[in-house]
Amino acid sequence: MKNLKFIIKRYKYFLVSLFICILIYLYNIGIGFKIFSTTFSSLIQMLSILPPVMILLSLLDIWVPKKYFIKYMGDSSGIKGIFITFLIAFFSAGPMYAAFPFTAILMKKGVKFSNIIIFLNAWCVTKFSTLLFEMGALGYKFTILRLVIDIPGVIIIGYLIDYMIKSRDLN
Picture 1 (tube, rainbow, N blue to C red):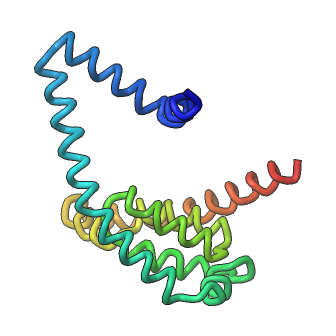
Picture 2 (tube, rainbow, N blue to C red):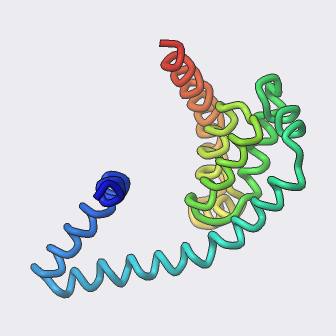
């Protein structure tokens, strides 16, 4: 009984979503089928991406000592840490959910929290593959203008969230 309560508490949002999907399926089989087929397709895509990511992250965790992360991306890394963070995000590949396991490694290795937030945001807005597509579809002027706005915004957001988390921890 205790395990059941734990499972329900832990997966309550998933269970509520599943219940809503089942209700939609019962109300309109066509829409319900589309919901479940889209979910299944996304699950297959995620399962094809995450195992290689997890293997590479395990190797990174073992091969790169914590002292290098602290030296280059830790609390005293400054602009160098921000640059390395953007560089890693720029050459990354895959959907956003592939960044979260890497973020866990960064946290474990002692990377400055603002650099972790910068990495997550930069993953979304500065990936090389995305920029190439964007330049082709929207033009280089738009892409450069967006980067000029986004890069300082990502840095500000990283430091702002870091400040807010530290302020909350002090109280």
